Length: 81
Image (cartoon, rainbow, N blue to C red; front, side, top):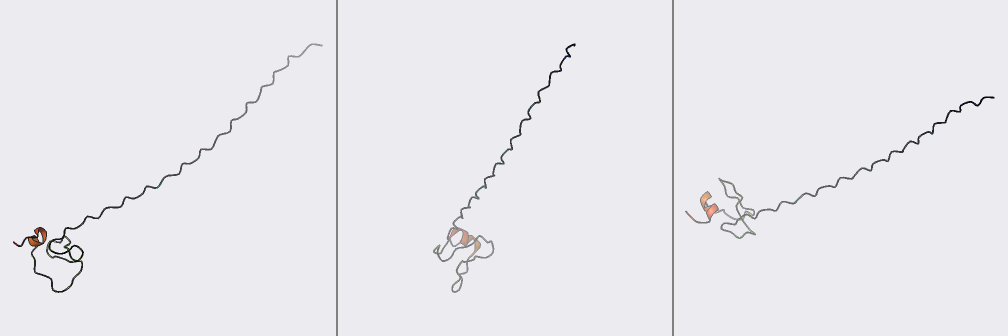
């Protein structure tokens, strides 16, 4: 009997498993606190009164008693014109 040519069996290639990528957690950025600028006190103690840069009127944080008549320039510079 003649020998039949045996076909070589092909080896099956193993499929590589894909690795799952880990998602990176995003870091939350901390908000920087803005420093409050100290408003210059013109003619009063800073704890009691100071103007808040308004052109026409002079405001006080604590309004007590009659407000003195003061001009805009005077409030800015601190010198009576």
